[in-house]
Length: 106
Image (tube, rainbow, N blue to C red; front, side, top):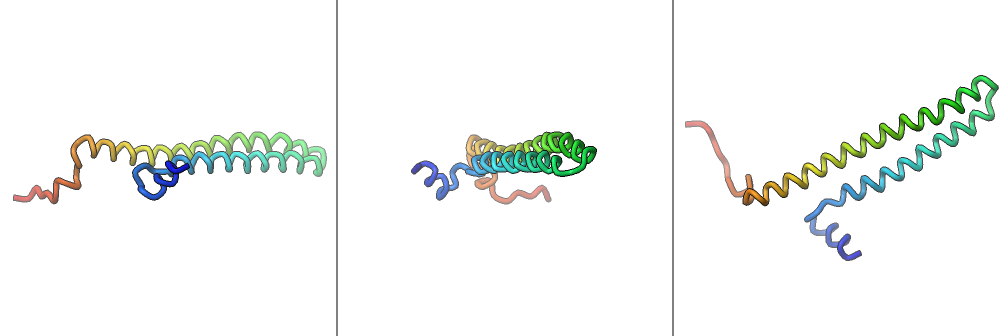
């Protein structure tokens, strides 16, 4: 527990990836609830429209899950690039912070 608190206050390691994973599972729960509402809502309609809702709700849920996963992966990749760039900067010896301003003009 103290490691999580220290990471929160020191900014040595980003906690965004952990938060994105939590938000992913919350989104999965909401999508599943939406699919169930769509399926059960289909029972209250007429025969044809109800059957259409019962079939369309799981298909829409799968599409929503794929899209939600894609969005969360994009955020994880962006924050992962930030972490890796920080490691590269440390390996090079400070990188742009120590180099100072440079100009190519004569």
